[in-house]
Length: 428
Image (tube, rainbow, N blue to C red; front, side, top):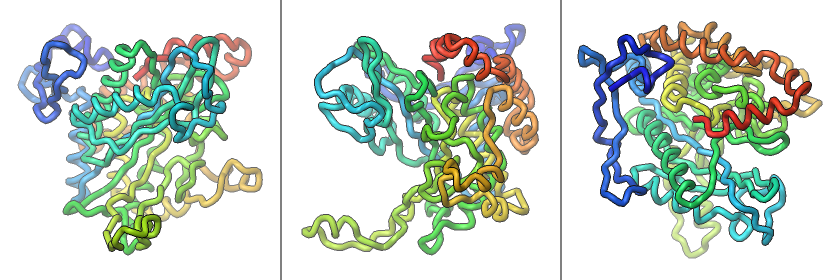
């Protein structure tokens, strides 16, 4: 096959032939083809029969192996896909603007569409946790825009990436069959909720979650968090890949701007969600006919990275997160970094201004993201995970947007923002 067409950022046509080999574990039946058709995701090999260094799925494989070799543990992940569904306006039972979170029919209009998507994803091997409507919903002209989310279960990081890629393909095909439009774009209009692609992570050893110790967040978790904190600004190069990504990363829009972490805190970059680590039997309390149990639910504890969006290259993003976690274990001061970046307040409230000023900030543009990747490139290239040519190509691509002053340009010409939204409406 012609690798320069598949990886135009990384290969030129003068020497671009690659072997393409299906990965059998990804096999699934195409739910949209009337003729029985078996689908695969594939790996790529160079002229010598070795894995192609510039293939993002191989970079993720190397990142996972490097993490295990360094720590003796396995890195796992799961994604949360947020997306807008766009269809003809229905004036009956309209949901309140920006109040669609966990709404149900008839106030949500595309619940059956989301259900069909989840069924097809599950049949294709996706491990789905659940799906629900999200905050964003609004009408514009004769169209209704409704935000939805599908969450997955935690699994080995390579499989998590495969599941996300297949799920996005299925959602788009399902929308086409329904006569709807969908977008994973990070921001489609000002003042309305943007769509992220949060990634939950977990570290396991002998199939036991290492993020919990004695019912509390462990030093292993804090060490991984320290790696996320250190690499956060450059991880945007893989997870926030076009100018509209940075329209979403603004205060008061349920998206992070500062490099910090906290418990259950949705104003932070890295959130430690409720993890079922207490010993209270809430099921028996809510359901008196149930027998009390003493189950260990600590495997459910994750740590959530909240800045990526649907523009991300899924394999490179998860490879970057795996490298960042590994870097935490290579740092001598990881626990001190975790302690310094922890917050237990809403950092955007006026009374917490001093704390906000003490924290690092995420990039505000692709151009700034490229600079952060350049500064951190040794971390990603260490152990041969990311090829230097790939880092060079990502930096070049981000700088090509030349969006250093994009906010000033949009203030002077509001239509420029609309043009960018249209340009990247079907990104990722």
